Amino acid sequence: MKTKKINLMLTQGEPIYGALQQLWIPLFFSKTKTNVLISGATQTSEYPSYNYIREIYFCYFKKFTNDATLKLTSIGFEEKNNGEIELKVDSKSDIQSSPLQLNYHKQIINIKLIITLTKDLMNKNFSNLILDLFKLSFPGITISILSNYAENKTSNLSVDAFVFFGENNSFDNVFPLIKGSSILLGEDIVASPSQLQQTILTFIEALKSKVNKDGIDALVTNDLIPVLGLIGGEIIVQEVTKEHKEIIKLTQELLNVKIKVLGNKINCVKPYNQQIPSIEDI
Image (cartoon, rainbow, N blue to C red):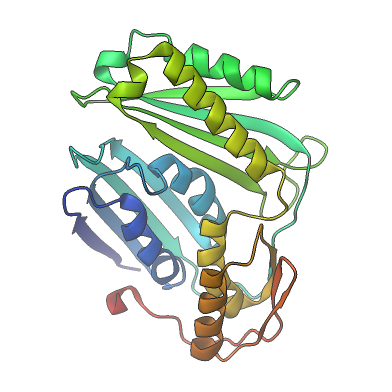
């Protein structure tokens, strides 16, 4: 099978999330091998970070492929726009026939922190400070930490936190539940240790609130609803929003399926195997 190559250059400050969100379904269900190189910002204050995309979105969608890799070759903040990501997808020749089932577990088995620092912050003790605050907030939970460094002249700091759920300390379900949150801190906050500490504590409280809610993130739900229309199944979401209802309506009309909503459960009862849009259609 011949590999298709696509190069995308984002405009100044354009988030990497927006570009990848439009590619998920055409790429992962296109029955082709595709290499995509995206240049532009990877860390922005208003949209999910690269790490959020890799740890959550990519984890879900990779299940539908023979093989897929998502590689960050350059971290870029929005004002520099010098990020670069390479996405390689070897899509399956047939659509997965088994329905999508996302098993929901309440037990936290691990928390993963990814700290992205700019070069001038490398020698400061921010990573240990953040790790200590998480250990105090989640006692008894194993917490791992990874530090990345960006070649930016500004003093930016980003924190990505991912909470992994499961049973018996294993990921035995097909789609392990992962919840995550990201924050991008500017020079003013980084320059003040007390303000940095309070900001991280507020970030942790928001993450705890998300953890205590049943179901998957609203952002992930947006992109999994069309997948339900393609292969059927059921997902449990934190909340069925107005945007979700609009996506459900559009998915039903385009794919000729019936999607039911009961509380915070979204279920596709009549999956219809139709032709998937190819990568050339986007």
